[in-house]
Figure 1 (cartoon, rainbow, N blue to C red):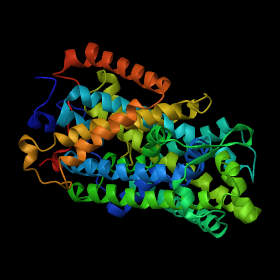
Figure 2 (figure 1 turned 90 degrees about the horizontal axis):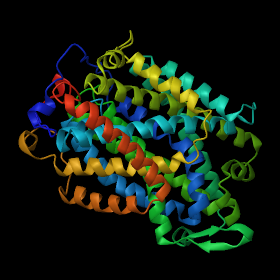
Figure 3 (figure 1 turned 120 degrees about the vertical axis):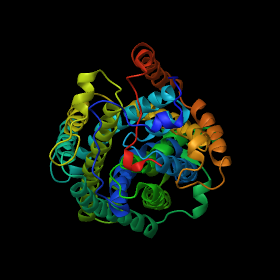
Length: 465
């Protein structure tokens, strides 16, 4: 057996007692609600976007818009690959099958890095938005959110779809309130959106350069990154060959609108450039309305963060479950991670994701936003490579959703993402590169020598062509 699996080998179920099937229990609506909750538009708007305002000023909306256009090409790749390889392993199952097991392993590590770091970082933002009611230290609030999300992750997925759906409605309302208030208090015309200016120290203003925008695209890609959650849920979606693509594309369209429209409104409605660059959205909302509206929006954002924590724990546990089923670890670890609880959820994997996430809330993770941006870009790059290779052999005639303009879409995406990647800060590239190097060592020293019994990527039998 070579390190690049042929299509039949890649699609064969892994041998041994471990493989178990997740329960197909949700349709497009439930899958879209869960996936949208992972994008978590309101918490992204209030927690991540302010960092872009501080560095890109009035060009923030343009940068997010460009990132969203790139994500259409990424979504095409995910949709086709996700219908060909509907596995809870998500990216790594798709890439392993199409581009070889080493590439799939590296994608697994990158995706695990992203989904393990982001929930605690966002969860700690809960404290700021609970401030109108109660003061809680950020690490304590974040740890509480992660533990609550872990408990919810142990429930049936259909129940979680309803829970996250209710929270999602509230956060979309909050984003809508911000958009209405911003447009109602516009201080500048639409031309400001295409004239990049940012406030500098000392009260001076500076021009945003094209290279600054390109560097910011890694974070812009991360802002709408959650649409990929649909492929992690593909084993639990009814009729995945039809519903995966529908869920991916619907989620990207809705999340882009929910995030981009308020960003435009905030850019136009900020009282001055200094206020916009500061990214203090709470103060702006209170100035546009009153304290009661500000409190309502803050509470909706807090619920949005809890919502995101629930969905991210669900997503991450499915990745670990799939890696155990595909025998990525020593046998005792594989057996533990593959256990399903009474509600059909991988309960050991859920606990392993949630409890360390709560502990990470007490660690300084500020610089990991940059590492996450690099990891997302690199992961999308490898997915695009897999999409370029996805119409070979038995996959050429397999029933699946097919992207338009293939192979131009993945080729263009590979070129653009490579350029974005090399423009990122050296520190973040080194951190991500170091983690990737350690993962490669694990592959070389443990997985590859045991290639007949380890890292045997599979998909459920009922989803095979």
